Amino acid sequence: MATARKVTSAALRERKGQGDKIAVVTAYDVAFARLAERAGIDVVLVGDSLGMVVQGLPNTLPVTLDEMIYHCRMVARGVVRAHVVADMPFLSYQASLEDGVRAAGRLLKEGLAEAVKLEGGAEVAPLVARLLAIGMPVMGHVGMTPQSVHKFGGFKVQGGTDAQAQSILAGARALADAGAYAVVVENVPSSLAAAVTSAIAVPTIGIGAGPACDGQVLVMHDLLGLDPDWSPRFARRYAELGKDAIAAFAAFAADVRSGKFPSRKENTR
Image (cartoon, rainbow, N blue to C red):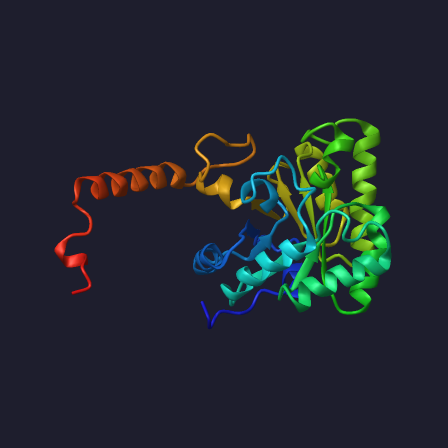
């Protein structure tokens, strides 16, 4: 993988409409980042979803900028070819342009990210333009934006009414016009995701938004089945690592209790 061509924000933007769909997964540490890299994943997203799948929180809102930098730095050490994107956490950019510039700068400077992702539409377009002007690539995010979970009354499908659909479409256009190189479209009707994909000149990355997007993203815990008791409707499980881990832990515990571990071959002398 070290000799493969590096995936950049510019290269991803050029893939719009080329038929070569973009594969994106989340990762939060070096081990899984390396595995994603070896698998040929295009984009590794250090998502603020870590608040839920790593920290056990009910939503993403408590995640801090320092926590995002910490996890991003680990992920960045594990990739060579893949493109690394860091989520901008709640309240790191909403109060002012200056806050947003500083937060994004820290994610690139200290977290070693290659781009940032932020949630919102027309209201964050000025920040997108400002970040791009000083050399920081931005991925947008419209539809079900998890940092607005309380506004939406839960993690619910968005864009079901004409007003919602028009707002999401206008937001995606504003992000693309401001210079975003890609836009995540989350948890909207597939027809709306198709309309957004047709309306903007940059790739759309879908999650729970149907097959018409230019790429797809999944949270790695959902994809790998790391939590046997949780499987979102829009996620496909490609493995059952949670069940495998439980079985491995149980086998280890049984061997320890019975004296089968360690054996002679596992002794250091």
